[in-house]
Image 1 (cartoon, rainbow over the protein chains, first blue to last red):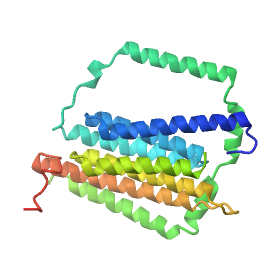
Image 2 (image 1 turned 45 degrees about the horizontal axis):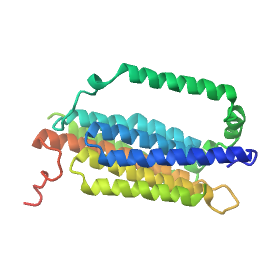
Image 3 (image 1 turned 30 degrees about the horizontal axis):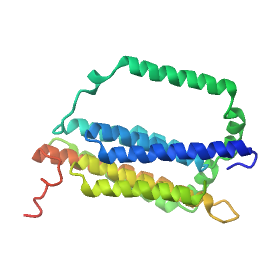
Image 4 (image 1 turned 45 degrees about the vertical axis):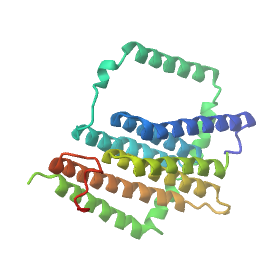
Length: 174
Length: 103
């Protein structure tokens, strides 16, 4: 990755890569194998988050932000709304099986681990944040979008408008 | 951690999505698997864009990923509108029951 990071940090990045890839493959398998459609949608959201983490590992921070905004913010909500509106699958009421004790323990564990990581500073967070601030690609992407790729950019905007109007026409009450 | 790692992960995700899109009966699950395949392709494109052997910075892969995300958003909006109208008109969203063009 970055040249100023030490050997133990590249080792750390390897470990992070393997953790992210195993979580990604397991959650993708969950999309296909889980029985409840709602749960497989939640598993798909986990897979989107791991893809955003891969983008950050590949120095594409802008694409990671776009991934979180568009996929996790918009497309997942659309999918979950579609699942809730088409109710011929068995929708169990998940909130009744939810245990507040387990959720509280998980939240407590996350809080304690964040505290410990911040204090022993194993990740060298401040140094890594500085190196991320220099490796940012938003300027180049913006200049490419208005110079070399200006025609596809305009075509994409017309396509989005057409899709919006088409979805509205399909879904409205006559 | 080099290009091959990312390509293998991308291929595994794409295969899982393809399996789901070919075998599932629920239309929304098929859309979810198609989104999974889009994400696998995006991962491969960003990997190629980072690990290419050119001296100057080349971000064309990132631009392609932005366009793919826009097309995927348009596709999922239209597709879910079609799912809703099929559900309203025919009371089913299983692809084995939507076969009126076959008869």
